[in-house]
Length: 458
Picture 1 (cartoon, rainbow, N blue to C red):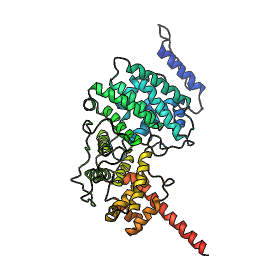
Picture 2 (cartoon, rainbow, N blue to C red; picture 1 turned 180 degrees about the horizontal axis):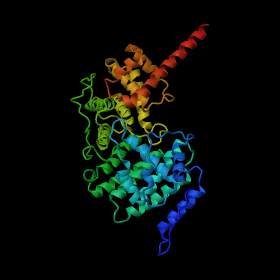
Picture 3 (cartoon, rainbow, N blue to C red; picture 1 turned 180 degrees about the vertical axis):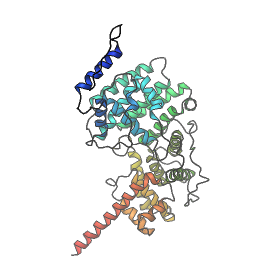
Picture 4 (tube, rainbow, N blue to C red; picture 1 turned 90 degrees about the vertical axis):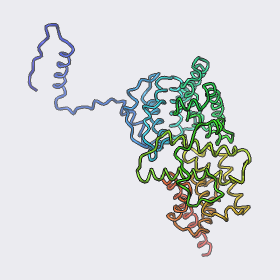
């Protein structure tokens, strides 16, 4: 290394001089040694948390650590907590706004991240949700101490907020929404319903849901979606009635996309479902312009309100002539495939599962003219039920029924079955893979039965 003199400034050694001196000293000390990366150890730790192969999950997309590391939270976070929050936001963003259908939702610039940075109650509830989310994925049997700490902090702060002058502010509404979502993660819809009643009163004091929708659409859609989800899970009526819920199926046009199998008895809502699924198939297949995330959400919420208004799941149907049990329940089952499953740990709508399973069995027992008049539609009902809320271990009769219906229609391959199913609401990107798995299970079942018959004959 060439010798170089560092001349002292008449005013003494300044910061720039010291920097030059240190640089030259270190060049001599590290000569010939490999240069160590200047990346922080924090980045390695976060990558270990996010991409640990022992975990039972895979990140749906690669995300940049810089998205959250430069933010200033209400409290200092360790690397694990920040990674958990990061994971929750990007996973739930993909679940709520599927990238194959929607334009990229910039979660970092959304109101929800702003709430985290500005509101300590929402900050703690989000950490409780994200910690619970990962606990479920890792199959932990109990709620972690980290989760309990954050949710207790969240409840205490929310109570203070609700007793203060800003009890119906956007932040207060968002904080109570997050508490309801926490109960969704822990499969406690009854407690979530308590929070929803509180939200309803807050929104009424604010001027009503229509006014909130005008002032903050992204925020207003949260309690509306919780309303229909909890109505399905608890079997109760919605709090926001259809005439006051300002949501519309903005992405549906039943007149332009009528189902090839449309019949006079089919309700309009079924044609709207077909219109929506056709649009999603077109967006995904032709790589056309993706949909606005809030338009996508509003359409789903609107369709759910139309369906849940017919009759609460715990009551008898008020208009069986228009919506026979099995048709109505199958449409609700179809809609569950468009809702986020926060824990991916079993059906979140057991009442719907029980009602739909009983309705299908009753249909076959009574041998009504409904099934005889339209076997292709019955096949759609069976497949939609099997890929959504009916689990094969609980409903072992489902596969034989699908096999019998396929035999009636002389369908012997997945390609022709898929063609029949696409005549009704069917979203290829969401339904093809689980539908194919159902068909494969039928093939395996009958192969095993044939093998057993051969063995018994021998």
